[in-house]
Image 1 (cartoon, one colour):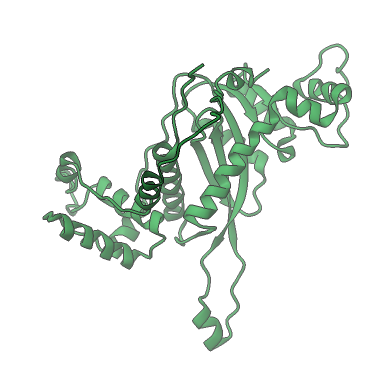
Image 2 (image 1 turned 90 degrees about the horizontal axis):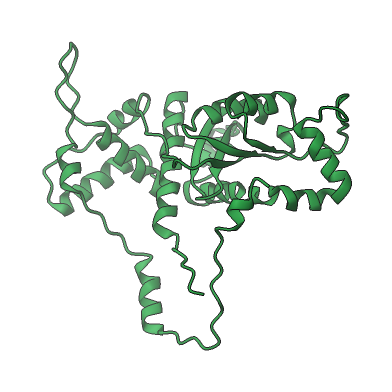
Length: 321
């Protein structure tokens, strides 16, 4: 089974009959969650200013690190560009650092072409869980609606995510128009994963021949876990040369839908749904940028923020018995 190895990694800690709680430490831990600590490493300070350009053209003042830092704080605190400029300036003053502050127009312009590093994937084969959701676009504000009677257009874009089932990290993402279907983004998502893929799991929207073909072309040994539609029928060669989809249909006929989900590990797809819920709870359910390039940067920055938060807040379990 594709997720048999994953099941072995889940360590359960035995329950303790008597547990003593130090309420003072517990209360201090709750308060620490609301504290804010910001520091700049020596490497970050040295890399804040852009390196001199050797070719023709104007000289940039801020490095990509400086722009990415500002846009990251913007995503975390849901700020406008001018508010982001003020926050960066206040942090630099509090730390006593003599560094220039990128203005809001520079942040907007540089976000169009900023290259955000891809999430790192380990050497082990990745179990991919994919799903999509909608993100609203900024429209007319409440004051404009009340004063001029302008109706807010319900325009939105579609966010496609691929999550590593082992770590819960977002390893690939894509932003498309609202009319794009999920199956068309399988190739772009897989192309962002540098390492091997052990399995690809999606919902019924991915039940298409080109999805199976796209996964097989890039990762021939990867398992494809997609529930066939209720009206699905076996292929003509199901008896002699069954396809992966035919095997799913046979398993459903023998064990039922729930039995198939348990046998294939389909229920692990809830992890990518949790990532989407975290995205909307932490980052928000809309896009602040207006242009495609800036929206792509905003999406990549947000994915990196969620991955970093997951690394900082995830406990480490150790088998003790």
